[in-house]
Picture 1 (cartoon, rainbow, N blue to C red):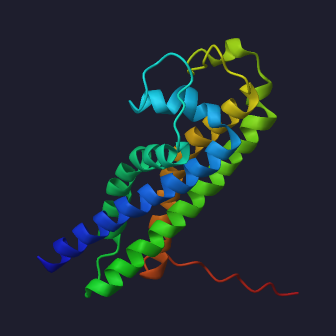
Picture 2: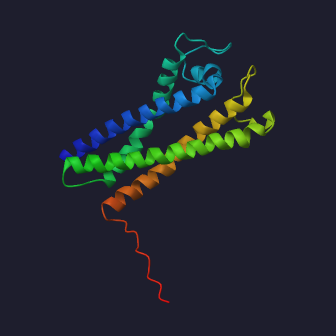
Picture 3: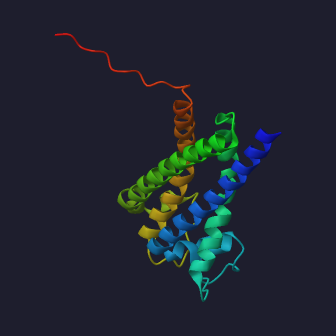
Length: 189
């Protein structure tokens, strides 16, 4: 019962961390492309009616709301899996190991997201608009390149969380001694 309660604590903390990551992530991407929010995300999350650009007196507050709502739920599967892989004899060790695995996951998600931003600016944004048939591209978009780069970063960040989870699991396994890194063989001359 104690381990189940500890797992629930890990999941709750994981949801909070994932939501905070989303807030920071979206504050960064809002800086790059405000239009991604004022012409897309604010409508997607029901904060404004579709039509003209959504103007809020404190847009960064609403960007934080969008960031939290878009990511908090990712903490559920990530924290559950890392919590299960972190089963230890005591509560403190279990929480510590799962949260460190979560940190590894976040770092990988951020790095892959940054690659998505780079790819968005250097490759995707140079493609004709017709190539984005599955993307929502507003008609009155002013900065196409930044909008596409931020969209690419968002998509890559979710993918990064998926890959990051595997690195997080590997980290937990390594710390528990389940995964061993082989020592390099000595080469004789």
